[in-house]
Amino acid sequence: MDPGAREDLLVRLFLGLRGCGLALGIAELIAAREALAGGLGGGGEDGLGWLLRLLWCRSAAQNAELDTLLHRLMEERQESGAPPPDPCEPPEPVPLQAPPADEPPPGEPQSLPPAPPPQPAPGIGPMPVRAPQTPDRAAAQRDLILYDPISRRAMAQGWRHLRRLVKDGPCDLIDLDATVERSARLGWYDGPVLERRATDRGHLVLLVDQGGSMVPFHRLTRDLVHTVAESSLGQVDIAYFQNVPADEVYLDPHRTRKLPLDLLLADCTPESGLLLVSDAGAARGALERQRFAATARLLVQLKRQSHAIAWLNPVPSRRDPHGTGQRWAGSTAQLIAAIVPMFPMDEDGFGNAMDVLRGQTHRVAP
Picture 1 (cartoon, rainbow, N blue to C red):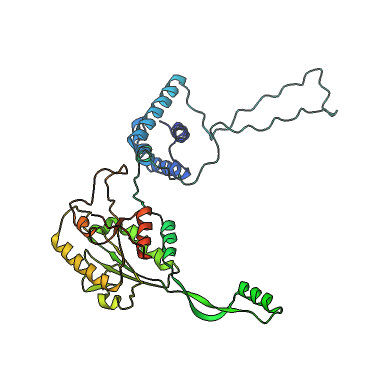
Picture 2 (picture 1 turned 90 degrees about the vertical axis):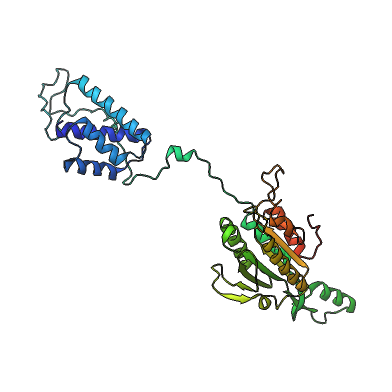
């Protein structure tokens, strides 16, 4: 195959494959030209197809489209039997003809018809320099399942319910209603009535299970920590543990900085809220009596500090949204849920946990 015919076939293949939906740009066309100029692909149809499959195609479906188009173009070339014109060869000159008799002589002016607008060549147009990143058709049909039971917005709104405003700040705010009432009672304005600023005395201790069976839920716990850190609560103490909080907890999620648990609970009052986030053994579905005994001892210690204790479990309590199939049953989570209010980590469960931390009573699951 001569270079001119090969170049024409390459361009027609390029335009045809782009019309079929392949992500091809100028960079792919230049790469194919350089490879052919370097001697790759041989001089026949099979070599050209092998080279273009290697450079342009990324799946079996694209290989089939290339082979079909190449075979059709080669059949059209054989049926025509005429090689394409050489682009370097100048066009043949057009012979001059005498003007008809009814036309005026060359010296007289004549009105010329308007020139037709230029028509773009078919199949030629602006192309991207780099091929766009389009997903594979087979990959686009796969359904991606994302476990997202609660959003960051719902978390941020839930933390607001834990605020406990107490007017014990500086007395520098004007009470407009009291000022108007006093002026009306006295009959003249005797100065503003001031009141104290309200400060948030809410206190939350957040204990997060990190590592082990909680690895699939790290995104949820990370969002939980970020939203409570950005909230306007008065005091938030965050600590991490693995499986069961022992005498020492950690101040970072990588569990490198230790802190005694008694020191973490030193600022707790009966109004403080204690929130634990862990799967409590429900992720593996096992019943570990040692873990339950250690968790029970911890809960007894926490109840000495405050009775506003709640537990968020990222593992759903049921296997499907229709309410059938218990997931906590038969695991350590079922025993722990009998001594502390435990809720699934969804919007409803998060709201119920906030109610418990606010001091509202909640029935413990049997």
